[in-house]
Length: 353
Image 1 (tube, one colour):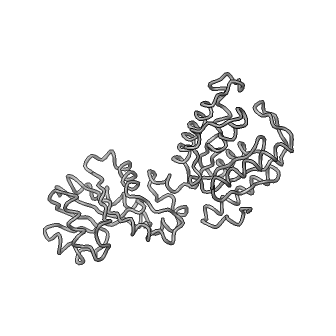
Image 2 (cartoon, rainbow, N blue to C red):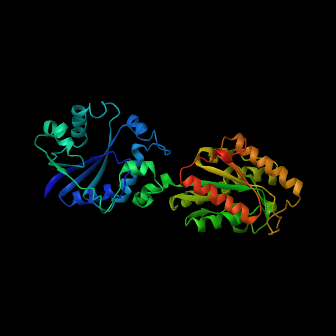
């Protein structure tokens, strides 16, 4: 058994083949360093032809640390290559950086490329064994490139700790009684995934004895905070996609409706870039009194719909799509849009300027 081993990689993103190689290597060492080798410029290039956002060094380290936290002989280390020449021109600098990062006698380096041995390891690590690991492409027929190209078609190979980065976030909003809440849950069932309920519907019964006349400004900030936590839970548990019923901008809207003024603390919780698509349900289905609603007049419903829509436009939310029709039509419109998003197809043609 080796005393000190190193397994370096870009891990962009980390997948089950990587995890298998790490675990196999750890059984051959008293201590294994998993070195995340990262260059932001290279990371940008890797994602040029992908619809995904580049992954940061700390994100990768967080995911692998979570996956490997129970293995006490494995240590995850970050190594930023931003100040050295990129591969294949930086072997000398890279080897010096690795030796600085791991200030111990490295007995073995595990790698997946046999060409690296002659390109650099023999020259710069002459006393170190270079052992080729098998990513077990039979058990895990995957690569980071394939995941970047099609994360949803290769979902099962993405590490569980990393999946929230890839989950598509669909925000569904609208005025009262537009089938929004029921459709969110139906979509989650159809796509076998998570959803976040509209916390504002339950807040008054939880904290105020269902007496909405006693709402104060700070209540709407608390609603938005609770909504944000429900969102984050849904994203963590999402299966490729998650459905979110309202956000802090809607809470701001209702704060204005109830109290005639806004809580400025809500602004910090409004995140236009968080969502991949905003589906705004139009109020063209019958108004139903569920005991929590008070805006039954059609003209007023449409006026408030336009107000909400313009709020999302003015705040810079992307892919804002109006969804209308009867209950069945709007459900299937949503399904069609989500299918296109998961197939990484463009949905901008749905968006009305």
